[in-house]
Structure formats: C-alpha cells, structure tokens
Image 1 (tube, rainbow, N blue to C red):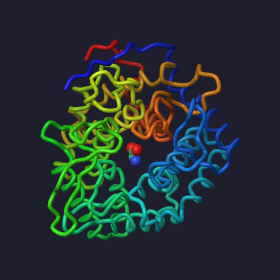
Image 2: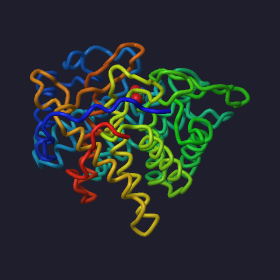
Image 3: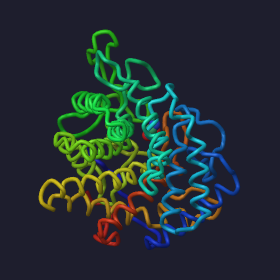
Length: 390
Ligand code: GLY
C-alpha cells in the first residue's frame, strides 16, 4: 500500500499554550451557547445539535473530558463546575446495555474525575459501567459485541476495554480482567493482520464462535485499513498493557503504530483509509490526534519495560503530529465562525456525516495528547515535520 497524499503543512503554528487558550474559547462558547448539548460533528464548521445518524449517542464523554482537562490546567472553578455537570449527566449510561461505547462515555468523564480528585462516586460509576460493558461478552467467539449485532465486533471496541479493567481493579474482580483480556486476544488474532494493519469489523458465528469475515462501515473496503480504527488500536492495546502488563498487548500496539507510521505522509495526518490512492478529502485529522495520544502512551509503556528506552520513535512521531495539528491549516484559530477546534476530520464518509469537519473526539484527543506530551517533557515544537515525503 502506498500513500500519495501529503500536502505541505501551511498556516501559522500556535504554541501549546495558545492552542489550549483557543480550545478554551471554543468550548466556553459551546457550553454557553448550547448548554447541556453534546454534539458529535460539525457541518460547515458549526456543531450539529441533532441526534447522531450513525451510532447511538456515544460521544458525550469527550466534551466532559475536555472540560476536566481545562479545569485542571486553569484551576478555574467555572470549568470544574461545567465538567462535573456534563459528567453527571452521563451517569445513566453506566447501565446502558444498548451500546459498546461505555468506555468512550465514562472514561474521559468519570475516569478523569476519579483520576484527578479520587471521587468515590466516580469510582462507583466506573465499576458499574465496567460491569455493564463486560456483559457484552459473547462466549462462543470470546469478543465484546457491538450494537450492530451479536455476531459483530469492531476494532473501536478496544477503546472500551479499559473501563472493564478499571472496574476489575477497583472492585478487585479478576473475572472482569479475564473478560477484558479475552476480547483483546480475540481482537489481536482476528482484527489485527500480520503487517500490523487492522480491519474495522469482524463477524463471527454466534453459535460456534467461528470467525466468518471482515467488514467495514467507515473505511473503504472490507480488506482495507480505516485510519481511525488503526489509531483506536494503537491507543486501545497500549491501554490494556498499562492495566495488565501483558507484553503481547504492547507488541500489538507497537506493530499497529509501525503500520500507521509506514503508511502515513511525514506530516503525520492520514487519509480516511490507506487503500484510497487519491483520497478526497485528503485528511482524517481525528485519527492523527488519537494516534498521537496512543503513541505517547505506547512510548511511556515501552520505556517502562526497557529501562527507559524504545519509546523515542513513537514520542517523536506523536510530536510531529501535534506540531502539524497546531498549524492553522488544521487548528481553526484563523477560521472565523468555525466552532470546532481541529478541522479536516471525517466521521462517516459513506453516510456523508462530518466529512472534512471537526469531530468531538478529534478535539478531545488533541488536548489529551498535548497534555501527555507536556508531561513526558518532550519538546512538542520539534522535530520539524517535512512536507509530503513519506
Ligand atoms: N464509533 C467510533 C468511531 O467512529 O470512530
């Protein structure tokens, strides 16, 4: 597979501090103009407030998560109040048996609340949510089912395994760890290929557990690699390693990251699917924000394993992505009237939802990745992204 896209990075580059200030102004506007609303994607740069036409209401955690990040960075009581309000509004989802996205909903929101403040109520919600997610296990195939069908699992589900592992730790329940690892092992066997690329959806026989075939919803073809799925895999397998210390999960995350790097232009932002020879639009920026956060986690994990070495390649690449995303080619800072933070993301190309727009998780993982980069002490202004060459 080759990637022919790779436009030069254009526009001015904002500092990390200015990027957070811009993000804060966009989010302040959103929560004051549309209180309580948790949009998924923009249309012509303006948040779409109607129901998501694709997945069942899966994204509210990202806005809450960004509010927590700002609350902690600024120490401003207004952000903390908003963060608590948007987080508590998600609490009923801890019992939602109709979605596989419990982790997306509750980890950035209740998970950050617990990580930052050790709030006991947040911990209880995470335990209940993790148990609900674990209830999606399909015993014959050993995977957590999607909302599509009992025979289906997505690569995205790897982002919803962490909440099961949190629940296992907080409730001291090893049966939950078993479920999380069983799904992760099934995913690495059937949804990650030998070259580290990923398929989007795997279908199984619900009676025998036999793997039947690959499919996709948001990628181009059943045998292709959807870039955001690849990024979810890098982050998801790194997170399973963080919780369990299982080195095969770390190896899988590394192989997924190597594939991402080998197929993506040097600016670090992939197309929606690497199979597309001449993709229009050329970028799926949310995949790169997720990949940056995932690679920074992977880098820390590798360093923890190998006496402080091995992480540089992924940390450096993540910082290239972040530098690209801090240019006004991607950051909406010089685009009057644009309501999101980063432009040029794609939610669902086939359904024409959020194509070349902002998406809430793109904005969220950009902020998370910038924080992780700062914490690692890396200089996110270097190395310099090159123009186009792979
Ligand atoms: N449902 C997760 C995604 O669109 O990436």
